[in-house]
Length: 275
Ligand SMILES: [Zn+2]
Ligand SMILES: [Zn+2]
Image (cartoon, rainbow, N blue to C red):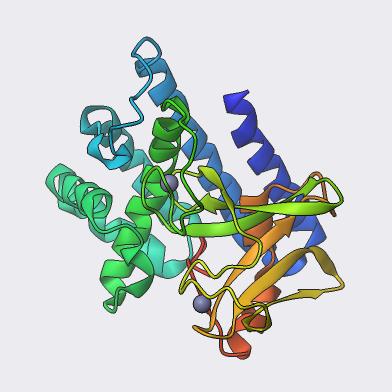
C-alpha cells in the first residue's frame, strides 16, 4: 500500500505530462525525483521495519537518522545534476564538492530550522540549498509521519500538526451534499482537516475576503485566494476528478500559478518544482 502511493504519484505525473504539455518538462523531472524518493522511503521501511511506532508526544523533527540518510545523498545530488533545471543542478554540483560534512550541514540546517522558512529566504543560494534538502528529506519526513501513532487532532491548525510545515495544497473530498476540505503538508505529506473558509496565512474568515478561481480547462483545481493578505494556495477537488493525486496535480497546473501571480497574489508555499 505504501509503495503504491509513490507509484500512483509517478503514474499520475506521467499521465498529466501528456494532458498538460505546458507542465510536461517539470512533471517528467518530478517523476524521476519521486522514483528516488520512493527508494529513500523504502530504505527507511526496511531499516526500521521492526522498530515500534513513534510516540505522538515526540515532535517529528526530533528524529533525524543521518546514519541511514547520508549514504543516499551522493546519489541524490547526481540525480539532481542530471535531471533538474539549471539553478538546482548547479547547486547540487556545488554541494557535491563539499563532501559529507557539507551535506550533513545542509540536511541538519533545513531539518532543524523554523518550519516554512524556505519561501522567504532572501538569499537565492540559501533558498536553493534548502530546496535540495527539502526534496531529499521529504520522503523521510513522510515515513516518520506514517509511522507515528495517530491521535485525534485538536482544532484546525494552519501548519502541519506533525512537523510544523506549511500546507502545499488543499484537498476537497465529498461529504454529504458538499465537500470537506483538508490540507497536505509540504514536508511530511500528512493531511489534516481544515475549514472551508479560512486563510491559513492570516486567519481571515470573512467570506467576501476569501474567494476562489478556476479555469474551465483545469476544472478540478482551483486557486483559493485571500484578499486580506494576498496569499493563495491551490486546492484539488476530488469530487470533480477522483483519480487526481493532489500533490502531483498541484505541480501540473502551472497556468493557475501564473494567473495568481499576475493578479498580485503570492503563494503560501512554493512546490517542489519551485513554482
Ligand atoms: Zn508535516
Ligand atoms: Zn490571508
